[in-house]
Image (cartoon, rainbow, N blue to C red; front, side, top):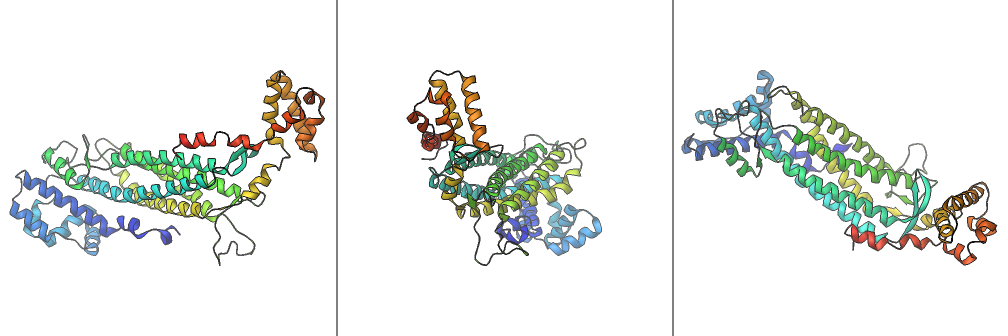
Length: 431
């Protein structure tokens, strides 16, 4: 299902063709560095630049016999280059190529994800400003609590996604680093300057110390940030799923002409996008755990991480790209039922203003303990009856002896929830 919606740009990054093209880019950059340092002849470099190429099918054919993807790749490239191919991969180990190329691919994927994040943040900003003063009920434990605004909900998501953006920018920079240090990271057969030159050519940072691999805490950090982005998407999706419930009906996912919600029940309009996003978040978390498991490798290197990364790196970047694009479309087209929000605000007959009454009583001299007991008793009566909370309070002598009718009425002002909305919006950068 995800494949149907995967944008070609992201999917192509993890194709065999782009993978081997990136490998070739790294190997040529190494040859250029070696030539600059005088280890290989410039004439040989020129031949390598002109002739180096590959054929995916041929690489796979060779790999079927040698059972080593890098050797299969180098063998195929040598078929194109000829004798000068002896200068390719000089002093390197497989992971020099694989880890450096992976950094390039992750940088390519990160560029797309970065734009996705900006698009989502823009949609959240727009929604927060549009619904800044749209009053709705705030809930704690799923129970009506006090008034808030739908714009504040979106402002919260906006602020959280900005943190995800900052995390991602940091993790992106951290994972964009290369390594050309040889079999166990000692530069025994390659000048350390080769790594510096290669990384500069490829636009990567240079790993200060490595074993035979770049240490996997860096990749685990990146994958954990992707999981955090997924967690925020799920957070938004869960809210939409609840608010679309028939008993609530405060928002709805867009429902296209001709769309079907159920094979059995024609009336269904289900929050399918939000449910998909919830599932995607689960996969991203699972992949982050796998990345964390990759951190501890045997001695200077093993390849237990390799098979894992061949799955989780493409999958997670594709999933995040898909998820961010889908939730952005969802939020830009979200159907918001402001009238239902107002109706639901008064569903409990004014009980949501119990704190205002409690504070008014204490401000007029009653102890907090006494005031709490009185207000709670009246609230429980309201829960059990069809009477309005304000009416019950007005009839309670303990309340009426302290507060005037006007003071009681003032406790039920829903605009109280809006008093500091401008302040909050300014604090999160929404003006």
